[in-house]
Each structure stands twice: as structure tokens, then as C-alpha cells.
Length: 419
Image (cartoon, rainbow, N blue to C red):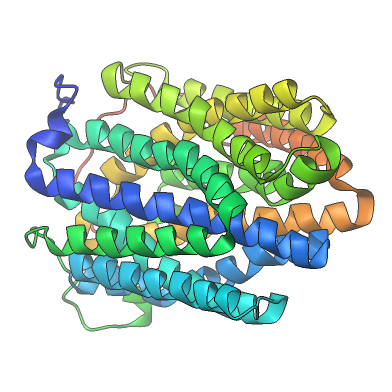
């Protein structure tokens, strides 16, 4: 029997553990945005090579791919809160290492890529744990509200983080990395303050069947498979974040502060939609809304790639963020509600690899294509590809398209464990 969503617009914050979790994610996401802006601009300053901008994304994605069979099982078998806190401390150490390279004037591509690999390993373990920890902190009826606020915390950081990163980098790279280091330490401390929540751990002996349970569940649940794969290919083709230093410096003729504005623009659009969804959640035609969001994301990407005017580029990026927020909200709510807790970590590990592929691997695609065809053609081709994906997936996953409400599914409890 489905449990109706709570009508309380601040329902998630009635739980103190979730409040700490929310602000921890806010500070850590803020730090990640600052680091992303600082590393991208500093790398382009040092090399002027678009390919290196793409490699920044690739080296952060590879650990998630290579460790996919491990990270989800760890999140399901061990204390998720402790995993998240430890990962944030490792992230702080990576920010400290970037700071040390900058202070000693040793910043160069390959030492930075080495640090980013460690950062990618940290994110590979933290992703499934943090995505699985949130649902443990609120009752099921408050979960859609928590998902909306989770997204707003990330998008708030996506607005303020890049602007702050650009401003801080304008002062000095040292200032940017120092603030990121402090925020990650604070985020880790907040997680340590969360009381250990209830968690249905996987207790069976480790086997290949247990390790692959996340893949088995996703492949058998077409709703989840369609939602995850739609995001993968849409953002993989439509991603333009890696090329923003090129647009800011060479096409739109803006400085580090302008790069911060470009990076923040998708977040502005997304936070508006996220806050709206927190107050007025999607109650009907959720699947259709998801596909419309992906289509608008592709259209915004296309406009951004064709624009050489700052205000139009920023507007296109805001549209991209707003439309992406719709699909993220639907996807994350579906995954959270349709996934049993005992396999949640492994499912989220697969999801995080797909998300990482769409973001970091998308940055590599964009950087590689830009080095061959130029930045603007690389983004335009990606936008056209995203529009095509929205059409193809809407026909290939009719059950996902027909999803109406975002409530827990009325179905018999299925075992997520292999026989």
C-alpha cells in the first residue's frame, strides 16, 4: 500500500539528523564548486589546452567506474554516516594538496590529475553512502520533500559556489583552496554529529551475486533503468561545464568572475525550480515532466553553444539548470522510493557511476571534441544529441513516460537479493 507524501513543506527539517545532513551536503557541495572553478581556470591558464579540461573530468570519473563493484557493497554493509564523514575528510586533504601545489608554485597537469584521482576515489565511496544515508534520516512520507531540499542544497551551492570560486580565484588560488578546505572540514564535523540512524545492512556472505545485486535490480526494474540511463546519455551529450573557461575567456571575453557567473547560471535556474518543487511537488504526469525537462535541457545547450552574447548565454544556462532540476527530482525520487533499503547502496553506486559518466565523462567528451572541432561546435553537437535522446527514450521506455505520481509503488515486496 502506498504511503501518501507529507503536505508539510518543511517536513524533512522536522528531523534534526536530516537538518545536519542538509547543511553538511551544502558545505561540501559549496567546496566542490569552488575547487572545480579554481582547478579549471588554473589549468587553462597554465596550459591553454581544451583537452586538459576534459581530462579533469575523466580522472574524477574513472575511480567510480573501476570501484563500482565495491563502493555500493561498502555502503550497504557498513555505517553510511561514518563513510560519508571519512570521505569528507579525505576531500579536505585533497583541497589541502591543491593548496600546497599552488603555494609552492608546483601546479602542473599531472600532479593535479593525481590529486583528482584521489578526489575521485573519495567521491566514488561517498556517492552511494550519502545518497543512501538521506532516506535513513526521514520517514517514507517525508522522502519526496527531503529529495527536493537535497537538490536545493546542491543547487544553492551551484549558484553561490562558482561565483565565490571566481571571486576567490580573482584574489588568489590560495584563497579559493583554503576556503574549500575549511568547508569540507566543517561538512565532515556535521556528519559526525548525526546520531547513527537505523539501517538495514546486507548480512549475507559476500558473493558475486551480492555484489551484482544493484545491477540485477536496475536491469529488472525498467522504471529505474529508464530514468538512470536517460540522465546518463542526456548529460553525457549535453554537458558543457568543462568548456566554460574557454567561453569565459575566449568567446564571451569575461574574466574569472565571469566564469563564476557562467558556472552559477544553471544553479540559479535549478534552485528556483527546486524550491518550487519543495512547496508544490509534482503530483501528476511525472514521467512526461521528466522527458520535457530533458528536451528543454537539450534546447538550452544548443542555444548556449550558438551564443556569443553574455546575457543570452547566461539565460540558456539558467534554462539548462531549471530543466535538469525537473528530471533530477523525478529520477532521484523514483530511485529512492522504488529501491529496497538493503540494496540501496549498490543501486546508488550504479546510479552514481551513471551520473559521473554523464558529468565527468561528458566533460571529457566536450574537451576532446573541442580540441578537434572547436568549443562552440562541440556544445552544439551535444545539444542536438540530447534532444535526440529525449525522443528515443520516450519511445523506448513507455512505462516511465506513463508514470503519474511520485509515491511509493503499490507492489509486493520483492527481494533485491539474488537467489
